[in-house]
Length: 573
Image (cartoon, rainbow, N blue to C red; front, side, top):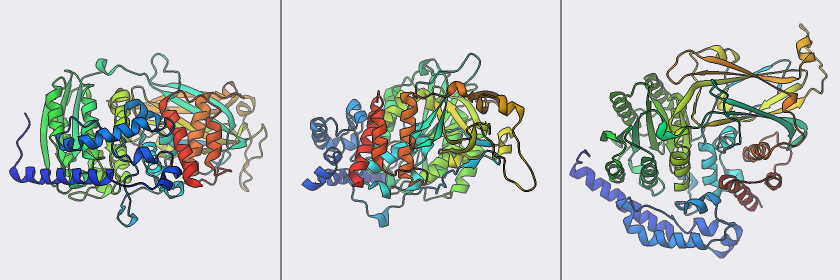
């Protein structure tokens, strides 16, 4: 049953909803100058206001007329001006471009990242890092670009190359019988430096039909603090979770915990087949008060533990802008709290929402420490991708603490550089240390790794050190292997890791790389330009555009990436 709320809480919530509706009309009423329309091909669509499908949310019913007008504007827009994924799913861009940000009040937080440098194989033959299936960075960058940010002003800490590349699906071979991963490899010329090679490694887990997955115990932890009143926050959270509920069945248990100044258990252990009850609870929420995120986390994990399903899928899904301002607020203390809860066998998914006060650094840390994944939801289309299309991958873990270690053969590789994964790097000795935490991979997830390498061209100069000499082993000289990939992983409920090993070399070299290879390279180059990388010769989005035009963009998400590159070209001139 839905628990009753006090009169004071209801009054505050009604006040918050009123503020949200007033903000909605203020945003959608913004006038646009003709020269702005001409400058930005997406401007008409995104300044038309939120194109919402919020009929399930009573708090937004007053905006029905505005919503209909926005949908009409979207339908009349130029096909090339509207991002393909939004064309496909009918809109709900939630007002990109409708905000005039005052940078003095923009408190978004991002961790600083130092780009991985080239490493000499004779000195550093091993590259060790944690797997990562987060996608938040790409969706957040899309929000910046479609909000008319000049590319040079996008925070560099927001650009994580691996999350951009891993946002997309690739045509990878699945795992062989008895193994959790299919391993794919391709080596060809590096598109941005023809003197170098680019190695692409792809891991693919087996996709599952969620209806046939193990029983699930899901706790929705929803931020309903005052900072969530904006229409691209709590109303979008409600729409997102209502989509997710349609995936559930009688084998699932659903609980809902909210937090603001305090926390409240709205539902506990409701059968997933009771969709109307769950949706009613979700749509009853309104935003008010401060943000005691830690209190909500404690309560959500308590509920998850009470409803724990042995050998099942036990998960807390938190939806928030990350703006914690009451209780435990520091990243280090939150990290300790989440790490402790993760030991109870409960996984965590983090969904980020909103802008202006968005705390990317906190949310990424929560996902990392909570044995989980992290996505940024900027639209109903993205919610559909994460919580419908990829629901099984994001909800069902098949391998945890996944670590990768690559050993390079100096007979073929002189120097190498890992693209992205800067905040996932591990020490060499961490690879065999089962107490070291690493990334989780879900059913149907893929992980793509890119290395830019300087070929040795079958010559070896040694390390040039004064007190030691280096020489190739006979195995290195006679081998056709460029590198060896080692993977350590644990079963979802396991404590001891398993080891897999794969050789990659001449058999994977091609002069005609696949479209998947070229697309992943284009995404990486796009990210490097946004990061102002010193390793991109031509810091011009036109080169990325040129590469994309040589390949088949065979799905809406890839077409959208090409559209974003076009917008950056427009806004960089």
